[in-house]
Image (cartoon, rainbow, N blue to C red):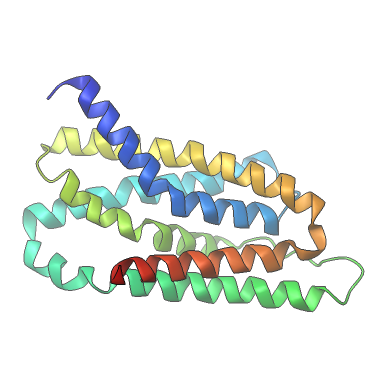
Length: 194
């Protein structure tokens, strides 16, 4: 396999897989418009880490337990939809309740919620295991690393965009962020039926 072809394929795969994590990053930035750089790096790192890990898990499943993966795969969009809808609804309710007060009471994203978001946005990356199933172990790890790195950079951009917009619409940031998460969950579910 040519190195350039390998890099190009995995860069494109990374960009495609990172779009849900990007959208959630924008929502997180909207929700917490005064987020510090260290926190942004941690959030982008979680999303990038899960996007790197899931294709490897998918690769292992394809190469080891294909029959089980085929049975589980039909539930993955539903799981993502439920998780993102719960988190989005929570943010939406917090934002609506804050509308009556002078100042929106921002509750920073907790680590548990961040991990759930990381899993929910990377579940579709399990199917990337099919795309890299022909790779050897070293190529699978390298490709997954590229996917994770691309996601990390894209999520940093999403957080920055969300923070910039969130500062301008601070009174409605949680509402918009919650709606974005719910819409991402619906999009993942609708893609199953299209």
